[in-house]
Image 1 (cartoon, helix red, strand yellow):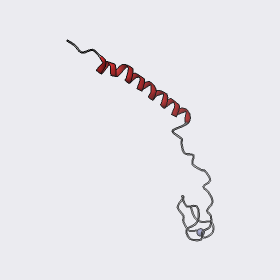
Image 2 (cartoon, helix red, strand yellow):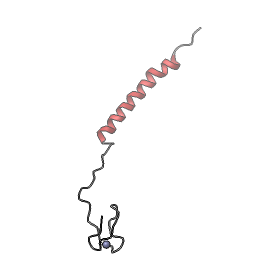
Image 3 (cartoon, protein in one colour):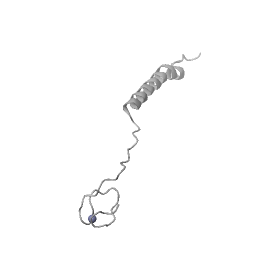
Image 4 (cartoon, protein in one colour):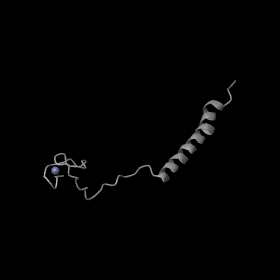
Length: 71
Ligand SMILES: [Zn+2]
């Protein structure tokens, strides 16, 4: 955006003008970052991971290695 004081261009992420050190106004629409890892999702992931771990340790591993050896 352009500085309201001296009119020079400033990148959006700048908080003060690089030329006159005036505090730049904040953008009108603060972009809300989409939070991917919400607490609810985190618990869901933990639950799924636990289920997968139980499945692997109690079903898959005995299936692969726990079967009695043949004659
Ligand atoms: Zn300025």
